Image (cartoon, rainbow, N blue to C red; front, top):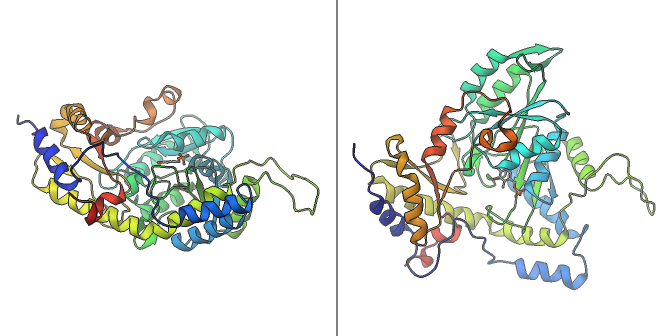
Length: 394
Ligand SMILES: *Cc1c(COP(=O)(O)O)cnc(C)c1O
């Protein structure tokens, strides 16, 4: 059996990345626009905290960019997911279908609701949930009871499914929506990685009942920490704002709270960063696309591995680039990770699959052979937008 030429892989990555000293990070934020001016204004005027014009403006800009009716800015993507699940009606003791291949926040948000994550396999073309495989599985385990899906094996209601757009590659939303309809399950999108990604021309985060975005430091745009809830339902948007701002009832001077709310609102100073970052988003997306194009060309001549590209039905933001080793070379993954990191190029394997994490080993799951194969073979490589800019090349 032939071996993968690791030095050739390293050389290919190097043709794309700038030469020079220092480590090339997996993903770095870039502040090249009005960040300083907007943040300074917050400090100069004293409007740094829970209210201020930047929160409103950021929400409007997000809704405008994504095409969602309403965007509600919150402290991070995890809290956005938590509230999305509540808005979708997830209750204690429910099961929620989540990808096995995801960042832990997707499963944790389910746990915050007192519900149980139930792990779903991926398909290779999107790395996200496999609608056909999920459908077959649900046909086997679901019985409809009082108009709701119940897991025959556990007796618990399966209330929601949370597809995630892995590394920015849009998951097959139409097919998943069909599966949800057939089995009476609500769809919530984890769009934390997919700002600037489109499914059949429509921005991701518009198909589910609600969706969560993240503006963590490593995401396409950052507010330091931050997130947002997207919805096309005015009433849900109103409730999202209300429960994330401590559920304070309108009153000129008295503090009255009409339900259990959360202090999840995004501070104005973070929203100021967000307003400046979203102005730069089109340029970031261009840089990331160019970078992906160069990687695709550089890896095309190497056999034994493939650069991960967007599915044909959609447009990816290429948030985090990845290569996948052929199955026969999976045993060389760690050697490649070692080699690249030793040479100043930050690389990383995929997330550890959810069903392997100690708190989730007992959770229900379907056959996860594709996610397991991806986990064995995938490596993320440097993806900062600035790396796709010409003037940055050596
Ligand atoms: C980043 C991310 C989140 C949210 O993360 P925060 O750090 O809380 O903003 C949720 N899900 C996925 C898949 C993510 O990548």
